[in-house]
Length: 215
Image (tube, rainbow, N blue to C red; front, side, top):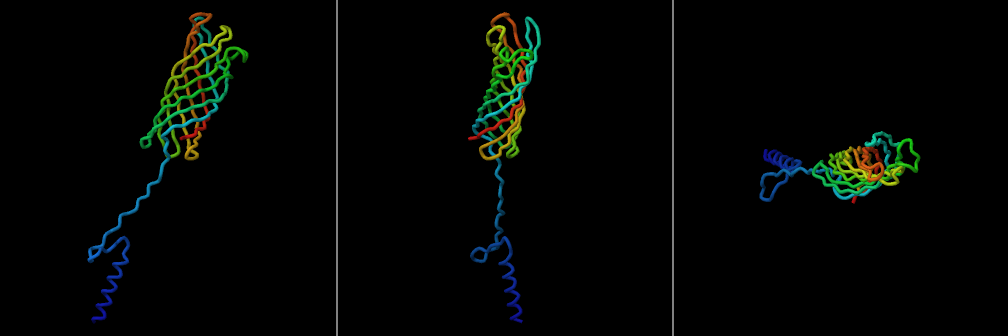
């Protein structure tokens, strides 16, 4: 009988010592459960400065007033450069960007290449986006300035107005991203030379493939 009781106690103590997640403290205190280990996956950080290069396809039209006539812009393309800075709060990403588009090929339809054409456009924009790890979807709104050469007047005409657009970036590595941006611009300006007082309104749209390096 004693041998049977001793065997039962030994088996009970062994099963308690082998129970998962339990540990005995000194002095025979009750077993304590070990806390679970929680592993959190890292997400991509979009905050910080970035610079990049792009190439855009551009379309649009231009309207003249006093006297009035309308012209289309030839479909053109050209390189661009941009620099910006972003902040991130959870999934929310916001910041600002400055971009320069070279538009030497953006001629007025019906005019020779050496005649009237858009030279460049500069966009200064605020950006607001939503990050899904390595994918960032964003919108932008800001101010644009452009210039076109008026052959008949022998001078350049300055244009300015607002821009807005939508785009996305994808981080292919910790420092490099690739993206696509569509921008619409509504610009206007006044010619200083002959005919005096003539105003111009330009609708210029661009879709740009962009490559960025992030610091």
